[in-house]
Each structure stands twice: as C-alpha cells, then as structure tokens.
Length: 456
Image (cartoon, rainbow, N blue to C red):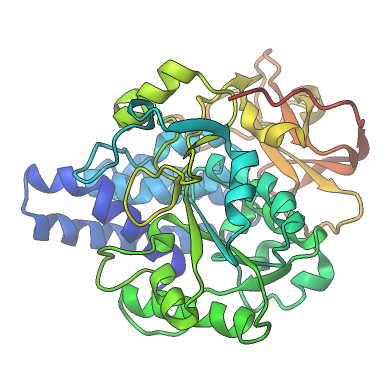
C-alpha cells in the first residue's frame, strides 16, 4: 500500500470522516464507499502522472473532481487534489480542499490560559531548549498543509547547534541514493518533497550537515502496525545501529509521533522506535492547533488563545518547572500557529520567520498565456531541482467549475504575485500547461535586513 494512502486513511477515516457514517448509511457502508473512492483516486492520480508538468497533471485531477460530486469521492479525492495544489504553491486552496477539523475530545488538557503556571514562548526559541535533554526529537505535519512544515524548517539550524546530526523524513524514497551528494531533492526523491517548503526542509538539513535518512516502509506487509514497525526498524538500523551516539530529528505525518495510547491496529512508529532503542524522545505536535478554513474547525482552546494573546509567530506554553503543555496525551508539546496573513494573494508564513523575502512577479512575463507556473530554482542547482518556491498566475481560479484550465486568455486583467526566496541567485522560469518554458532568466534576491518576526 502506498505511504500516501495510509496517511489518508489515518487522517480521514479516524478523524474527518466519522460524522458522515451517521447520515444515510452504516459505518461499514460508509467505509466501503471510501475504499472504492480511494481506489478510484489512485487511478486518477496515476493517469495524471502520465502527463508532463504539474499544470497538466493538476488539470486531470481537477476535471475528475468536478465530474464526481459524491460525498465519499469528494472527501477522499479532496486530499489528493490538495496535495497537488500544495505542489503548485496554491496553499489557500490546498487547505480549503482538505482540512481535518479539531473538535474537543474527552481527555484534552485544560487550556494553558486557565493555569497560571504556564507561560507563552515563541516556539522557535522554546523547542531547542526543551530538546537539549533528548537524543530524539519528533515533529509531525499535516501533509497538505505546508504551514505545519514552516516551523520545522526554521528549527533545523537551532537543533543542529544543539548537536543533532541526523534528519529522517517520512516521504523520502531510499532509491534516491544521490540525494546527499546532489544536495537538493528532485521529483524522484519523494512524494511530498514535490512541495517547495518540504523540499526546502530537506535542502536545509543537507546544507546544515545533517545526515538525511529515508525510513519509509518498503515491504508489502499489510496493516498499519506492520508499516509502523518497519519504519521504526529502518530508523534504528540506519541511525542508531550505525551511530550509537546519534542525535536525531524526525519529520512524520500526523500521529506517527504519538508516544503512547491507542493507534489504529497496533502501535505508532514512535512507540515501536522506543521499544527498539529505549531512548527518550520529545514529541512535538503541529497538526491540531492551526487556523482552519472555517473557524468552526478550530479547537476551542485554539480560539481562546488566539483571541487573548494574538500571537504573530508560532507559540508553545511551558511552566516554571520546564514542563511544556500538550493538548492531548502521548505528545509532549503542542504548537499554536497564528492566523494566516495573506499578502498579495499568498500566505505570509512563506517568509519562514524572516529567512525569505517576497520577490514580486508580474503576469506580463507570461505573454498572456494562463495559467502560468512561475518557478525559482537556486542558481547552483540543476533544472531537475524542486524549486525554492513556485506559484501559479492565472486569471480564473484553478479550482473553478469549468471543464478545463484555460491556457490562453485575452482578458485585460494582469495577475501578479510574490515568490518567497532566501537572499541569493536564482533561475526564474515561466512554464505553461504543455510544460513549455516561455521565459527563463537569472534573478538576484538582495540581502536586505529581515524584518522582525514579531513577539508572541
């Protein structure tokens, strides 16, 4: 079973889909509809990937989405299409297409606002301090919400300074043996690494001197517990058996990092890893307390913290004894992400806490061919590199109700937007749907002083 399918099953069947089972069919019938929808979704994605270029692939995905409005298909395929929207840099639509709401659950911790012992801290400062006493730090993400990767990219340099020297990423394919020497991810490096912020995470780890490890399960063993067991074994063999003194940072999806408690048909990767290594680990939860497309999807604790504190950066809570606050058992720390500020149509968190600057691009360069994919690659990387950032300039929404994405428009409006890039030299490419590059040029992003990332 593909890794992305299991990620969908964990995120969807257990969380987002449960209310649907109570409507017109039984839970078993609803699960059967979802299974059929997942099979159909796999076939559509396989067909899409026979086309050249992300724009053409996305067109196939979007047309399939508009043809089938059945609830099970829309729910399952919504996650698939959201991955491709994130690959295109269309982050608001990716969140709109699929987002797991966070209702309060029995066993949730009381709000840190109600306990005077907890003090708010910027997560970027507090997490490295919390990590000092550990050899394993686990960070999770929501695969179609790259906001939940943005803090991890920033943390890598701080954790490297603390002595962490291995970085394991769930999505990486072990077949890409040239990744360490090449220094940057390509399409063949992984699935989620096709998204620029994930690629930047891997690229950053390599540049900082981390030994980057693939650990995904590769056998055909069925069941989630078999996958979790194999993931843990790969980490143990490739990190701790090879280097008994290693200090490891792991990036994984959703509840793979929960350290205890019920987990599908067995135990999580983190729990299996502890059984193998007996090394204490710090588990940092990032997929529950972020702003959802509708405030009805936000956990009440998140709403209260945002309303009272109005943070500008990701935050965590720690008490005087050094114990961090976590929303749910099994995790050590919960990260609160502030509301998203949109700037020229793109989320401001793409600045990665001041590491990257906005670089404006006008649709005039697209020669009135839309949609137009704008990509910026580091000048010292190959044309096969996943871009540092990419976005789509278009005169109609990519997720509109039409039968196909328009390739040419004669309308007078001129779309524009900002790429977010670190200071340095890049190759800027403008690509249209037949994967044809209509312009390529060298650009320089100046090393202007970074603005203050703000206070919590």
